[in-house]
Amino acid sequence: MFIRITVLEFDPANASEVERFWRERSRPSALSQKGNLGAKAFRVVHALGQMIMVGEWETKEEAETYLQSPEHVALNDGLAPYLKGCLVRYVGESVD
Image 1 (cartoon, helix red, strand yellow):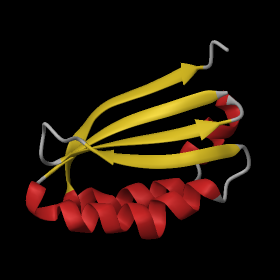
Image 2 (tube, helix red, strand yellow; image 1 turned 30 degrees about the horizontal axis):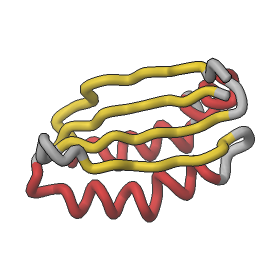
Image 3 (tube, rainbow, N blue to C red; image 1 turned 45 degrees about the vertical axis):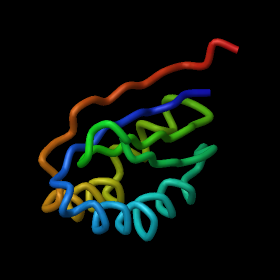
Image 4 (cartoon, rainbow, N blue to C red; image 1 turned 90 degrees about the vertical axis):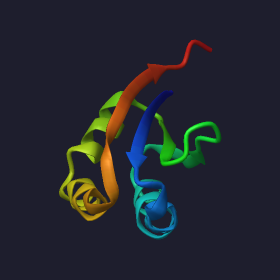
C-alpha cells in the first residue's frame, strides 16, 4: 500500500471554498479510481489556511496514473484560484 500526502496553503478566507471543492469534486474523483483505498482531508489546527490531503493506494503506479490523468489535472486547475501553493508532497510505502 502507498499513501500520498499533500499539504495545501490558501487564504483562510477561502477555507469554505477549498473544503467544499474537496468534498464535492476532489474526494469523489479519487475514490472512483482503480486502486484507490481511501481519501481524506484534514484542517491544520495550528496553521489557518492549510489542509492536509491523504490518499491511500494499492500501488504506486495506480496513484501515479491518476495523478497524471486529465481528470486530476482539471481538478488542480479548478482549485488553483484558491491556493497560495502546495507546500509539501510525500509518497510513502507501507512497512507492514
